[in-house]
Structures are given as C-alpha cells and as structure tokens.
Image 1 (cartoon, rainbow, N blue to C red):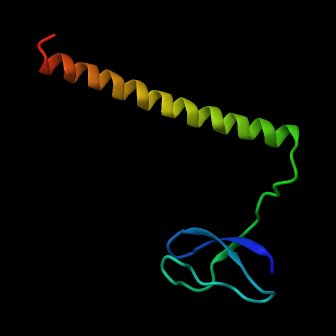
Image 2 (cartoon, rainbow, N blue to C red; image 1 turned 180 degrees about the horizontal axis):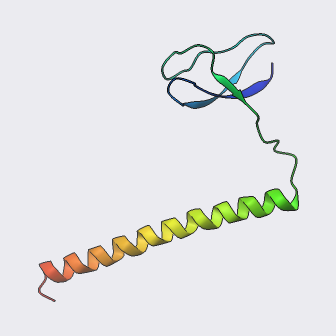
Length: 86
C-alpha cells in the first residue's frame, strides 16, 4: 500500500495515509470526505536547487528563532531591572 499526503478541502489539515488503490481516506480532524491528494517530495532526490531551497528555508527559520530569543532576553532584562531597581 502506498503512502500519500493529503490536505483536507474543508479544514485545511495536512496528513499522510496508507491507502489501497482506489480508496480515499477521510480527514482525521474533521472527518470530511474527499481530501486533496498532494504531490510529495521524494526523499531520495536531491539537487543543488532543492538543497539551496532547503538551506534558505532553514536560515529563515533560524533567523526568526534568533529574533524571538533576542526579544525575550531584552524583555527579561527590562523587567528584571524594573523589579530590582537597576
């Protein structure tokens, strides 16, 4: 049985499902029938273009996390100084 990736047309939930030929699963979140079958990226195919795209995405996520940590640290320091008379 092949593993397919689906997106529910009703609620937008993405999920993977092992299905038999000709069968279509229902959404595990909202039980809606007929989700949209998506094209999955093959794990074995890697090109320079896909590696660069993945690296770009990873850098964007890492920069977002860094900004959140920097903001949280600055907020902590402001609150600490306010609470401890610094």
